[in-house]
Length: 261
Ligand code: BTN
Image 1 (tube, rainbow, N blue to C red):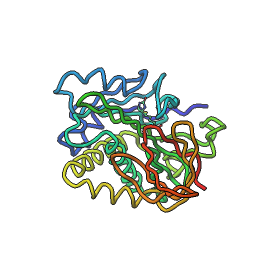
Image 2 (cartoon, protein in one colour):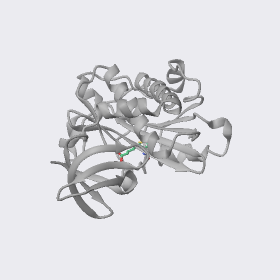
Image 3 (tube, protein in one colour):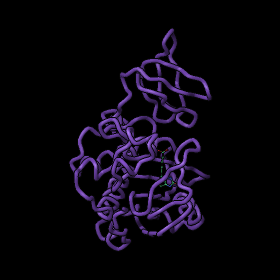
Image 4 (cartoon, rainbow, N blue to C red):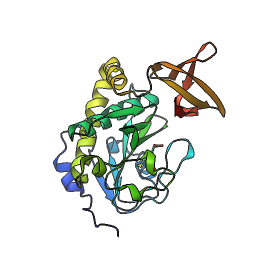
């Protein structure tokens, strides 16, 4: 039976914000197509910079590369933040969101947090959160999905071994309103750092990276490549020392990690 979890409350979320920009407005929907779509629908008005859109449910939630993002009502934290791009490139937003989300997890004592390039947050090697950054003209929408209340049986069988949630990891029923505010606070922290000190974001990102220094397989434009991950170029992609010779860069937009070898 589905448990009746606490609802998201825009006032509770706003009350715990320490931000100047992100969460300037907080809206909560009970159901939407995708919070990214809603955030885009607010994009014309410059006063909406920093707007944070949450939804308890999405009927067309999307992930990277055309994947669906599914979650039952009130089980996850589904949010999108609308920002003007300033001097940060689109791909870099994915990195800084990854760092921010990793810090959110660590702040609530979750251990073994790592980032699987480009946009998966893992705990003990299992996916707990994903990031979908979309860009149009001078605006960006940072879409984030965090598994909160799922139990192993809530995940579809094909992903249940590869997925986890905050409740599973902490053994408690986590408070989504607190996690929502923390996420916005830490996103703002890392957006600010990215504006002045990109290397700091990259260093932090590398400290969480599960791929650097390991052998990986990558699918790029429908072709498979295997090699040792020797670097990350934040604006372009992942650098592989290809087995059999050569070094190659793979852009995030066209790549998927097929497996860690
Ligand atoms: C991925 O892992 O491929 C990215 C998943 C991103 C999912 C979030 S949920 C909130 C926001 N709205 C969407 O439709 N997608 C993102």
